[in-house]
Length: 120
Image (tube, rainbow, N blue to C red; front, side, top):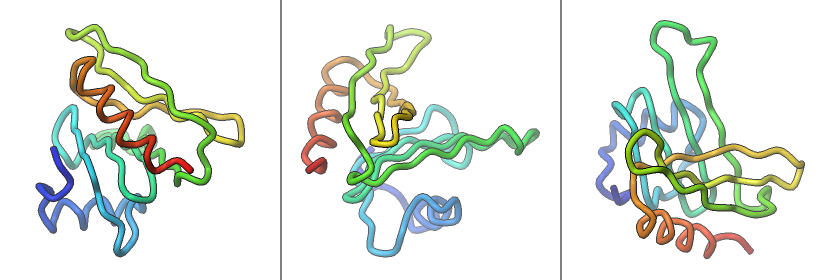
């Protein structure tokens, strides 16, 4: 979904996770489940992913990188059934993480292209 479709409550929740700063604009958001459990998005400043386990908080997953921390971003295509497509975020500190989007090849390519515009 486009970032402007997120409610102020949704944005407050993402801020509470430490994944969004004041004035930061979400450009695109995707959730594989409920928004409070799963979220993958990019903003005008970063790309991020989270998964919040209700029963086992120790397994919570929070990953985020600002564009100046990123070396490159690659596309990993899903199979359209079991696996979502993902952007593989390769950081300058030689680590990486994946940001998943429930979409097909054409849309993940469009998302990849849109994120690339923020990498300088």
